[in-house]
Image 1: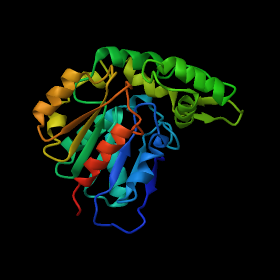
Image 2 (image 1 turned 180 degrees about the vertical axis):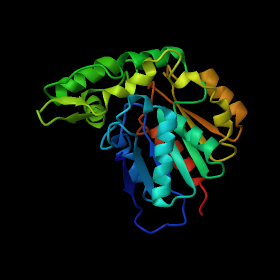
Image 3 (image 1 turned 60 degrees about the horizontal axis):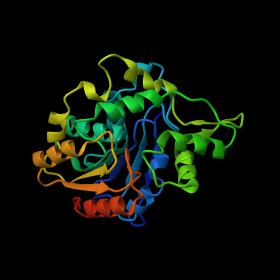
Image 4 (image 1 turned 30 degrees about the vertical axis):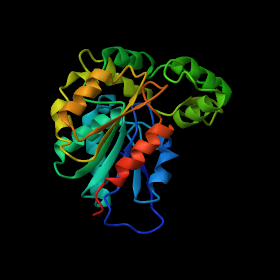
Length: 277
């Protein structure tokens, strides 16, 4: 299957530096990192992954392959294709789960990680909210209509957003069809595994995968209003990995866009700790 990634090269060649892989959330794509990726690429190569069924990547013939282990295999295929041995990751939600599994399956190759509003313990209320809207909804006639729909769905997640913010988010998550309609930019069948009884992200014990991160530079971002990563779970993550850093992003839920000043400053500090070779 055809899989797509965007590569951002720094102004000066830095082939010895492990690149940063940016891994989007469940219904997101490479545009989630349209501001962060070029910023980080001022210092080292950045590769933004689009998981199967999103953005420019092909849709899967079997919807039951829309699961974290398949995404991990896809990322490994990308690493092999590019000849990348060591790398860091910035993962939002699903992307953070993929990061943890990569740490467990490729020991010694992950040199740093940002877990954006995700961890080995997820809140069922938040997962239920996501299951309710993923794969649903139709098309809209204009970007303004689509932005209003996105705002209605996410008002509690980003309570301080105005129209400009909702338009920016909508253009990151939606696309214009050949017929001139606005639709979500993912295969609606990505929801299929989530509807399987006892399936989805909460089905496995992810604490061993989290522990596999070891003592690499680790940043945990948490939306202060998050219904996915509880503060108690984040505190346990810190207890398990005392060298990690926890930063709460005020005024947002699941998940921070990482355009917020608090998130950007924390990511810059984390990137400065990554190995130079």
